[in-house]
Image (cartoon, rainbow over the protein chains, first blue to last red):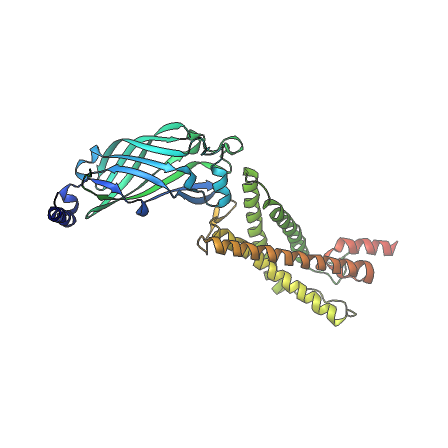
Length: 190
Length: 191
Protein backbone atom coordinates (compact mmCIF):
# COMPACT_ATOMS: atom_id res chain seq x y z
CA UNK A 1 0.00 0.00 0.00
CA UNK A 2 1.30 3.42 -0.94
CA UNK A 3 1.66 6.06 1.71
CA UNK A 4 -1.03 8.25 0.20
CA UNK A 5 -3.51 5.40 0.19
CA UNK A 6 -2.70 4.60 3.79
CA UNK A 7 -3.34 8.17 4.87
CA UNK A 8 -6.68 8.07 3.07
CA UNK A 9 -7.56 4.79 4.64
CA UNK A 10 -6.67 6.09 8.11
CA UNK A 11 -8.73 9.17 7.42
CA UNK A 12 -11.66 7.01 6.43
CA UNK A 13 -11.29 4.84 9.49
CA UNK A 14 -11.22 7.86 11.78
CA UNK A 15 -14.14 9.42 9.99
CA UNK A 16 -16.41 6.45 9.77
CA UNK A 17 -15.22 4.48 12.74
CA UNK A 18 -16.86 1.15 13.34
CA UNK A 19 -19.19 1.72 10.39
CA UNK A 20 -16.25 0.66 8.29
CA UNK A 21 -16.48 -2.64 10.07
CA UNK A 22 -12.89 -2.50 11.21
CA UNK A 23 -11.58 -5.34 13.25
CA UNK A 24 -9.94 -4.29 16.48
CA UNK A 25 -6.83 -6.33 16.64
CA UNK A 26 -4.04 -4.24 18.19
CA UNK A 27 -4.33 -4.22 21.95
CA UNK A 28 -2.86 -1.14 23.62
CA UNK A 29 -1.46 -2.71 26.76
CA UNK A 30 -0.45 0.59 28.34
CA UNK A 31 -4.11 1.61 28.26
CA UNK A 32 -5.46 -1.77 29.34
CA UNK A 33 -5.86 -3.07 32.84
CA UNK A 34 -6.39 -6.40 34.49
CA UNK A 35 -7.53 -6.20 38.08
CA UNK A 36 -9.17 -8.27 40.74
CA UNK A 37 -10.91 -7.85 44.07
CA UNK A 38 -10.91 -10.43 46.79
CA UNK A 39 -12.35 -10.41 50.28
CA UNK A 40 -10.10 -10.85 53.26
CA UNK A 41 -11.85 -11.00 56.64
CA UNK A 42 -14.85 -9.38 54.94
CA UNK A 43 -12.70 -6.54 53.61
CA UNK A 44 -12.51 -6.03 49.84
CA UNK A 45 -8.88 -5.80 48.72
CA UNK A 46 -7.90 -4.58 45.25
CA UNK A 47 -5.16 -6.11 43.20
CA UNK A 48 -4.11 -6.62 39.63
CA UNK A 49 -1.51 -7.81 37.16
CA UNK A 50 0.93 -5.32 35.72
CA UNK A 51 2.09 -7.48 32.81
CA UNK A 52 -0.09 -9.37 30.40
CA UNK A 53 -0.36 -9.89 26.69
CA UNK A 54 -3.51 -10.00 24.64
CA UNK A 55 -4.31 -11.07 21.11
CA UNK A 56 -7.65 -9.78 20.03
CA UNK A 57 -9.82 -9.83 16.99
CA UNK A 58 -13.12 -8.12 17.39
CA UNK A 59 -15.27 -6.78 14.61
CA UNK A 60 -18.52 -5.38 15.99
CA UNK A 61 -20.23 -6.27 12.73
CA UNK A 62 -19.14 -9.90 13.09
CA UNK A 63 -18.92 -10.23 16.85
CA UNK A 64 -19.56 -13.95 16.88
CA UNK A 65 -16.35 -14.41 14.90
CA UNK A 66 -14.34 -12.54 17.53
CA UNK A 67 -11.58 -14.19 19.47
CA UNK A 68 -9.28 -13.28 22.30
CA UNK A 69 -6.30 -14.86 23.99
CA UNK A 70 -4.91 -13.31 27.16
CA UNK A 71 -1.65 -14.38 28.77
CA UNK A 72 -0.99 -13.13 32.27
CA UNK A 73 2.45 -12.95 33.82
CA UNK A 74 1.60 -14.04 37.37
CA UNK A 75 4.91 -12.69 38.69
CA UNK A 76 3.60 -9.19 37.99
CA UNK A 77 0.87 -9.61 40.59
CA UNK A 78 -0.14 -6.83 42.92
CA UNK A 79 -2.11 -8.51 45.70
CA UNK A 80 -2.51 -5.41 47.83
CA UNK A 81 0.78 -5.39 49.75
CA UNK A 82 4.38 -6.51 49.34
CA UNK A 83 3.81 -9.21 51.93
CA UNK A 84 0.83 -10.55 49.99
CA UNK A 85 2.73 -10.34 46.67
CA UNK A 86 5.49 -12.54 48.06
CA UNK A 87 3.01 -14.95 49.59
CA UNK A 88 0.75 -15.34 46.59
CA UNK A 89 3.58 -16.45 44.26
CA UNK A 90 4.39 -19.35 46.55
CA UNK A 91 3.35 -22.98 46.24
CA UNK A 92 0.04 -22.79 48.11
CA UNK A 93 -1.18 -20.02 45.80
CA UNK A 94 -0.02 -19.57 42.19
CA UNK A 95 3.11 -21.70 42.49
CA UNK A 96 4.52 -19.24 39.96
CA UNK A 97 7.86 -21.03 39.66
CA UNK A 98 6.13 -24.00 38.05
CA UNK A 99 3.16 -22.14 36.56
CA UNK A 100 4.33 -18.61 35.73
CA UNK A 101 1.42 -17.85 33.43
CA UNK A 102 -2.35 -17.82 33.44
CA UNK A 103 -4.11 -18.02 30.10
CA UNK A 104 -7.58 -17.33 28.80
CA UNK A 105 -8.55 -18.61 25.36
CA UNK A 106 -11.97 -17.69 24.08
CA UNK A 107 -14.08 -20.32 22.37
CA UNK A 108 -17.14 -18.27 21.54
CA UNK A 109 -18.25 -14.65 21.63
CA UNK A 110 -21.95 -13.91 21.66
CA UNK A 111 -23.74 -10.56 21.28
CA UNK A 112 -26.20 -9.94 24.12
CA UNK A 113 -27.84 -6.91 22.56
CA UNK A 114 -26.83 -3.27 22.54
CA UNK A 115 -23.17 -2.89 23.39
CA UNK A 116 -23.16 -5.98 25.55
CA UNK A 117 -21.39 -9.19 24.67
CA UNK A 118 -20.27 -12.36 26.30
CA UNK A 119 -17.04 -14.30 25.88
CA UNK A 120 -16.88 -17.96 26.74
CA UNK A 121 -13.61 -19.72 26.99
CA UNK A 122 -11.12 -21.71 28.99
CA UNK A 123 -9.15 -20.16 31.80
CA UNK A 124 -6.01 -22.01 32.82
CA UNK A 125 -4.24 -21.24 36.09
CA UNK A 126 -1.82 -23.47 37.95
CA UNK A 127 -2.29 -26.25 35.41
CA UNK A 128 -6.04 -26.38 35.90
CA UNK A 129 -8.53 -25.36 33.22
CA UNK A 130 -12.05 -24.17 33.85
CA UNK A 131 -14.75 -22.90 31.53
CA UNK A 132 -15.57 -19.27 32.26
CA UNK A 133 -18.08 -16.82 30.87
CA UNK A 134 -17.19 -13.16 30.89
CA UNK A 135 -19.79 -10.56 29.98
CA UNK A 136 -18.32 -7.34 28.63
CA UNK A 137 -19.28 -4.09 26.98
CA UNK A 138 -17.81 -2.68 23.82
CA UNK A 139 -17.41 1.03 23.18
CA UNK A 140 -15.97 2.00 19.84
CA UNK A 141 -14.64 5.46 19.24
CA UNK A 142 -13.09 6.00 15.86
CA UNK A 143 -10.18 3.67 15.45
CA UNK A 144 -10.05 2.61 19.08
CA UNK A 145 -12.32 0.38 21.08
CA UNK A 146 -12.69 -0.16 24.78
CA UNK A 147 -13.82 -3.42 26.27
CA UNK A 148 -14.89 -3.54 29.90
CA UNK A 149 -15.98 -6.65 31.65
CA UNK A 150 -15.40 -9.13 34.36
CA UNK A 151 -16.40 -12.37 35.94
CA UNK A 152 -16.15 -14.16 39.23
CA UNK A 153 -13.80 -17.05 39.67
CA UNK A 154 -13.64 -19.41 42.59
CA UNK A 155 -10.03 -19.71 43.66
CA UNK A 156 -10.59 -23.25 44.90
CA UNK A 157 -11.36 -24.35 41.31
CA UNK A 158 -7.72 -23.61 40.51
CA UNK A 159 -6.24 -24.68 43.85
CA UNK A 160 -5.23 -21.07 44.50
CA UNK A 161 -4.67 -21.02 48.24
CA UNK A 162 -4.02 -24.53 49.49
CA UNK A 163 -3.28 -25.93 52.91
CA UNK A 164 -3.97 -23.47 55.70
CA UNK A 165 -5.47 -21.09 53.11
CA UNK A 166 -7.97 -23.60 51.73
CA UNK A 167 -10.52 -22.49 54.29
CA UNK A 168 -12.57 -19.50 53.08
CA UNK A 169 -12.90 -17.98 56.56
CA UNK A 170 -10.09 -15.49 56.04
CA UNK A 171 -9.78 -15.25 52.26
CA UNK A 172 -13.07 -15.77 50.45
CA UNK A 173 -13.37 -18.25 47.60
CA UNK A 174 -14.88 -15.74 45.16
CA UNK A 175 -12.50 -13.42 43.37
CA UNK A 176 -13.90 -10.71 41.10
CA UNK A 177 -11.88 -10.27 37.93
CA UNK A 178 -12.24 -7.00 36.05
CA UNK A 179 -10.64 -6.10 32.76
CA UNK A 180 -10.38 -2.99 30.69
CA UNK A 181 -8.90 -3.56 27.28
CA UNK A 182 -8.25 -0.88 24.76
CA UNK A 183 -7.48 -1.83 21.19
CA UNK A 184 -6.95 -0.15 17.87
CA UNK A 185 -7.97 -1.30 14.45
CA UNK A 186 -4.85 -1.97 12.47
CA UNK A 187 -4.44 -3.15 8.95
CA UNK A 188 -3.04 -6.62 8.81
CA UNK A 189 0.73 -6.45 8.80
CA UNK A 190 3.28 -8.58 6.96
CA UNK B 1 -25.64 4.72 99.07
CA UNK B 2 -21.89 4.46 99.33
CA UNK B 3 -21.70 1.69 101.91
CA UNK B 4 -18.29 0.06 102.05
CA UNK B 5 -16.91 2.49 99.52
CA UNK B 6 -14.65 5.46 100.14
CA UNK B 7 -16.73 8.61 99.94
CA UNK B 8 -14.16 10.21 97.68
CA UNK B 9 -14.58 7.79 94.73
CA UNK B 10 -15.29 7.81 91.04
CA UNK B 11 -18.77 6.77 89.88
CA UNK B 12 -19.32 3.07 89.21
CA UNK B 13 -19.67 3.89 85.52
CA UNK B 14 -16.36 5.75 85.43
CA UNK B 15 -14.67 2.89 87.29
CA UNK B 16 -16.15 0.27 84.97
CA UNK B 17 -15.11 2.26 81.88
CA UNK B 18 -11.60 2.84 83.24
CA UNK B 19 -10.89 -0.83 83.90
CA UNK B 20 -12.65 -2.09 80.82
CA UNK B 21 -10.51 0.20 78.70
CA UNK B 22 -7.38 -0.64 80.65
CA UNK B 23 -7.81 -4.33 79.86
CA UNK B 24 -8.86 -3.63 76.28
CA UNK B 25 -5.96 -1.27 75.56
CA UNK B 26 -3.44 -3.66 77.09
CA UNK B 27 -4.83 -6.48 74.93
CA UNK B 28 -4.89 -4.39 71.74
CA UNK B 29 -1.36 -3.14 72.38
CA UNK B 30 -0.03 -6.64 73.01
CA UNK B 31 -1.70 -8.10 69.94
CA UNK B 32 -0.51 -5.17 67.83
CA UNK B 33 3.04 -5.61 69.06
CA UNK B 34 2.98 -9.38 68.49
CA UNK B 35 1.21 -9.59 65.13
CA UNK B 36 3.63 -7.51 63.06
CA UNK B 37 6.46 -10.01 63.21
CA UNK B 38 4.34 -13.00 62.20
CA UNK B 39 4.70 -14.75 58.87
CA UNK B 40 1.61 -14.17 56.72
CA UNK B 41 -1.05 -16.73 57.63
CA UNK B 42 -4.81 -16.86 58.16
CA UNK B 43 -4.07 -16.45 61.87
CA UNK B 44 -2.14 -13.24 61.22
CA UNK B 45 -5.00 -11.86 59.09
CA UNK B 46 -7.45 -12.70 61.86
CA UNK B 47 -5.24 -10.99 64.45
CA UNK B 48 -5.06 -7.84 62.31
CA UNK B 49 -8.84 -7.78 62.00
CA UNK B 50 -9.37 -8.40 65.71
CA UNK B 51 -6.85 -5.66 66.49
CA UNK B 52 -8.76 -3.21 64.29
CA UNK B 53 -12.19 -4.21 65.58
CA UNK B 54 -11.00 -3.92 69.19
CA UNK B 55 -9.44 -0.54 68.34
CA UNK B 56 -12.74 0.74 66.97
CA UNK B 57 -14.47 -0.60 70.10
CA UNK B 58 -11.96 1.19 72.35
CA UNK B 59 -12.53 4.40 70.42
CA UNK B 60 -16.32 4.09 70.83
CA UNK B 61 -15.90 3.34 74.53
CA UNK B 62 -13.69 6.40 74.82
CA UNK B 63 -16.48 8.56 73.37
CA UNK B 64 -18.87 7.17 76.00
CA UNK B 65 -16.22 7.78 78.65
CA UNK B 66 -15.58 11.36 77.58
CA UNK B 67 -19.33 12.09 77.56
CA UNK B 68 -19.61 10.62 81.05
CA UNK B 69 -16.58 12.59 82.19
CA UNK B 70 -18.10 15.86 81.00
CA UNK B 71 -21.17 15.28 83.17
CA UNK B 72 -19.36 13.84 86.20
CA UNK B 73 -16.53 15.67 87.90
CA UNK B 74 -13.84 13.32 89.13
CA UNK B 75 -13.18 13.35 92.88
CA UNK B 76 -10.72 15.92 94.17
CA UNK B 77 -7.11 15.01 94.72
CA UNK B 78 -5.88 14.84 98.34
CA UNK B 79 -5.37 18.33 99.75
CA UNK B 80 -1.85 17.45 100.87
CA UNK B 81 -0.74 16.64 97.33
CA UNK B 82 2.07 18.94 96.10
CA UNK B 83 1.28 21.22 93.18
CA UNK B 84 3.80 19.54 90.82
CA UNK B 85 2.17 16.18 91.41
CA UNK B 86 -1.28 17.58 90.67
CA UNK B 87 0.05 19.20 87.56
CA UNK B 88 1.79 16.07 86.30
CA UNK B 89 -1.20 13.86 87.18
CA UNK B 90 -3.50 16.08 85.15
CA UNK B 91 -0.98 16.32 82.32
CA UNK B 92 -0.65 12.52 82.12
CA UNK B 93 -4.43 12.05 82.22
CA UNK B 94 -4.98 14.62 79.49
CA UNK B 95 -2.24 13.12 77.35
CA UNK B 96 -3.68 9.64 77.82
CA UNK B 97 -7.09 10.86 76.65
CA UNK B 98 -5.40 12.50 73.68
CA UNK B 99 -3.57 9.26 72.83
CA UNK B 100 -6.74 7.21 73.24
CA UNK B 101 -8.10 9.37 70.42
CA UNK B 102 -4.93 9.62 68.33
CA UNK B 103 -3.88 5.95 68.42
CA UNK B 104 -7.05 4.47 66.92
CA UNK B 105 -7.31 7.36 64.47
CA UNK B 106 -3.78 6.83 63.16
CA UNK B 107 -4.46 3.09 63.03
CA UNK B 108 -7.54 3.64 60.90
CA UNK B 109 -5.72 6.15 58.65
CA UNK B 110 -2.68 3.90 58.16
CA UNK B 111 -4.96 1.02 57.29
CA UNK B 112 -6.66 3.14 54.62
CA UNK B 113 -3.35 4.41 53.26
CA UNK B 114 -2.10 0.83 53.04
CA UNK B 115 -5.17 -0.09 51.02
CA UNK B 116 -7.06 -2.08 53.62
CA UNK B 117 -10.38 -0.64 54.60
CA UNK B 118 -11.44 -1.13 58.20
CA UNK B 119 -14.69 -3.11 58.27
CA UNK B 120 -16.01 -3.30 61.83
CA UNK B 121 -16.55 -6.98 62.70
CA UNK B 122 -16.32 -7.68 58.98
CA UNK B 123 -19.78 -6.15 58.59
CA UNK B 124 -19.72 -2.38 58.95
CA UNK B 125 -17.34 -0.62 56.54
CA UNK B 126 -15.73 2.48 57.99
CA UNK B 127 -15.08 4.94 55.16
CA UNK B 128 -11.52 5.44 53.96
CA UNK B 129 -10.45 9.02 54.48
CA UNK B 130 -7.21 8.43 52.60
CA UNK B 131 -6.56 6.77 49.28
CA UNK B 132 -3.93 4.05 48.98
CA UNK B 133 -0.47 5.58 49.17
CA UNK B 134 2.57 3.56 50.14
CA UNK B 135 4.71 6.40 51.54
CA UNK B 136 1.84 7.85 53.53
CA UNK B 137 0.98 4.37 54.80
CA UNK B 138 4.51 3.83 56.06
CA UNK B 139 4.61 7.28 57.65
CA UNK B 140 1.31 6.70 59.45
CA UNK B 141 2.51 3.27 60.58
CA UNK B 142 5.56 4.91 62.14
CA UNK B 143 3.39 7.55 63.84
CA UNK B 144 0.99 4.85 65.09
CA UNK B 145 3.95 2.92 66.50
CA UNK B 146 5.55 5.91 68.27
CA UNK B 147 2.26 7.10 69.72
CA UNK B 148 1.90 3.60 71.15
CA UNK B 149 5.35 3.72 72.72
CA UNK B 150 4.45 7.09 74.22
CA UNK B 151 1.21 5.61 75.53
CA UNK B 152 3.13 2.67 77.01
CA UNK B 153 5.45 5.09 78.81
CA UNK B 154 2.53 7.15 80.12
CA UNK B 155 0.51 4.11 81.23
CA UNK B 156 3.60 2.84 83.04
CA UNK B 157 4.09 6.11 84.90
CA UNK B 158 0.33 6.35 85.57
CA UNK B 159 0.42 2.85 87.10
CA UNK B 160 3.64 3.52 89.02
CA UNK B 161 2.18 6.74 90.45
CA UNK B 162 -1.02 4.95 91.53
CA UNK B 163 1.00 2.22 93.26
CA UNK B 164 3.29 4.79 94.88
CA UNK B 165 0.23 6.60 96.29
CA UNK B 166 -1.21 3.37 97.59
CA UNK B 167 1.90 1.70 98.97
CA UNK B 168 4.10 4.62 100.01
CA UNK B 169 1.88 7.64 100.56
CA UNK B 170 -0.96 5.36 101.75
CA UNK B 171 -3.62 7.78 100.51
CA UNK B 172 -6.94 6.95 98.84
CA UNK B 173 -5.88 7.67 95.21
CA UNK B 174 -5.92 4.04 94.07
CA UNK B 175 -8.99 3.19 96.17
CA UNK B 176 -11.00 5.81 94.33
CA UNK B 177 -10.59 3.66 91.23
CA UNK B 178 -10.58 0.32 93.06
CA UNK B 179 -13.35 0.46 95.70
CA UNK B 180 -12.78 -3.23 96.47
CA UNK B 181 -9.36 -2.28 97.90
CA UNK B 182 -11.04 0.38 100.02
CA UNK B 183 -13.61 -2.04 101.38
CA UNK B 184 -10.86 -4.45 102.35
CA UNK B 185 -8.92 -1.67 104.04
CA UNK B 186 -12.06 -0.63 105.93
CA UNK B 187 -12.82 -4.20 106.97
CA UNK B 188 -9.28 -4.49 108.28
CA UNK B 189 -9.67 -1.23 110.15
CA UNK B 190 -12.92 -2.42 111.76
CA UNK B 191 -11.58 -5.74 112.97
